[in-house]
Amino acid sequence: MITSLLVANRGEIACRVFRTCRELGISTVAVYSDADADALHVRTADTAVRLPGAAPSETYLRGDLVVQAALAAGADAVHPGYGFLSENADFARAVTDAGLLWIGPPPAAIEAMASKTRAKELLGIAPLADVTEDDLPVLVKAAAGGGGRGMRVVRELAALSTELKAASAEAASAFGDGEVFVEPYVENGRHVEVQLLCDTHGTAWALGTRDCSLQRRHQKVIEEAPAPGLPAALEASLLDTAVRAAKAVGYVGAGTVEFLVADGRAHFLEMNTRLQVEHPVTEEVYGVDLVALQLAVAEGRALPPEPPTPRGHAIEARLYAEDPAREWAPQTGVLHRFDVPAEGRVRVDTGYASGDAVGVHYDPMLAKVIVHAPTRAEAARKLAHTLERARVHGPVTNRGLLVASLRHPDYTAPDALDTGFYERNLPALTAAPDGEAYAAVAAALAEAAARGGRFGGGWRNLRSQDETRTYGDHEVRYRPTRDGGHEVTTPEGVRVVSAAPDRVRLEVAGVVRDFDVDAYGDGTVHSGPHRLTPRPRFTDPSEQTAPGSLLAPMPGTVVRVADGLAVGDRVTAGQALLWLEAMKMEHRVTAPASGTLTALHAAPGRQVEVGALLAVVQTEATEEDPV
Image (tube, rainbow, N blue to C red; front, side):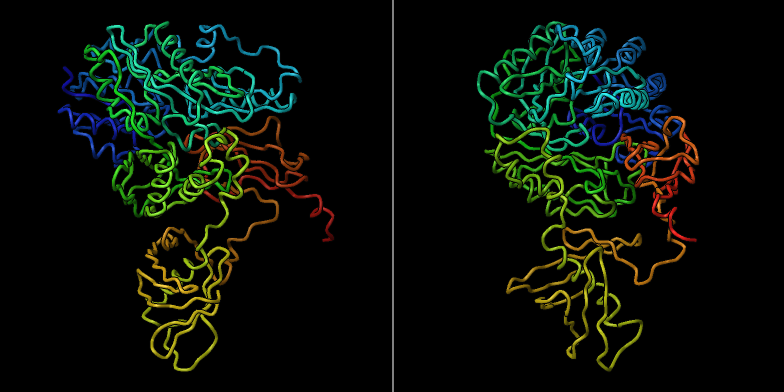
């Protein structure tokens, strides 16, 4: 029997495993990097062991340190979570060699399936060797790991060499393994997977299907179970193939087999020999706790001959600290308030709480919000409403994108689901949401109320020009009234019902709306579901930058500079100049226009903050201007 368990992971998945352990009466041990010293998973665990350093390669990817931590804390079992060392056969062996119980499949099964190239060979699928124009488009893919790291779509043969190098570098950084391979890229298919659970007594459960087609940068955003609209014969084939793959390698524990479905055919992608991020939707539909079942299987207990009967539909949305309108750039900062209403069949799996800081070292996922309902339509409606009402105050998030996605006709009609959803619909999904202009009015009036009705720093007895506040693209003009209230002149058609520093009531076209307003020291204002950034009245001259300046769009590390790039080189618009890595993602910084590189301040390994000057490209138009 397991009495004490260490989770070789961090954040949301560590907290989720600890929750099950508490229910089972198992003591918990966390490991943490210096960057995670006060993280929620550390505060949640019974005991915790420090892994000195901040980078994953120094901490969570150091299997030797994790095993030492388990022994030092007196743990008798290790759960890997997902990511990091979860699909590392050498780590699994190190755990068992230390006399600890490994919560996962046998190392031989990990080796057979964790490498996508070897998994394909096992199933008789060969990667592309010599790519020609006729093979395009192709997908460059990391042999180890997942989560979209080390993946590149290549549409031009001339770009293949560069993308192979970039994918290999990213994979080596993320997984400690730079092996990559090339396979055909199936355009606009559906990403469908099968959840497996196998015991040591020969029983293998196929717990239905999941659809994970809504992805950005090859990483899932919205997942659901069961996968809607699959023909019965195709679904049966997927379940059968998954079970056969598991039995072929003597699989034990939880795992997932992934497919790309297109034109009525299923193409094998990989088998993930671990728990998946999206496992909660299967749990909700089947009424099981997959972590508890993992632990039972590891203790040698047998599964019932058949899995439970599925009921209803579940959808999961991943809430990220990122800006979808800026190429999904990850965001950092203090999460001032984090409150998701968990009413009814709403579940929130998170590694953050109000007041926690979102740093630069790890994945920017804040939480997974899961809803279970009798039907898919009901689940989507409930999840969108829940996210809309959530108070997520701090860094920019993808919350608005998630709400818009769940209500988009290409999502609500399951026949339209495919991996090209965001490529087609992103501009519309990231447009300013309805009501943002009125949220700006509420923010301005709340600020005025907080000043006690004073305008411009003093009381005014005579009517003068309007007071003006600007939030993003929304300009608000208002003036005081004789009865102590306010009159809004821009935008038109707004009547102020009441205004207090934290709550404003407005009437627009006969409809009264309430806005809860929260302003924070970092300058952000949250008005209802809207995040607003006040614009200063006057520009600080010190903040002006020279034309052609390339500024860091996020905090991170310079991982690469284009081969041979030097000051004085001619560059073309869109040419990749350097790469930044931040929060598990690699971001390409390109030349904004054709011209001459006149400054280069980036070097591999350099840590940069948001707005740091990386390079300057003097455009051709600027060069021709008279001095």
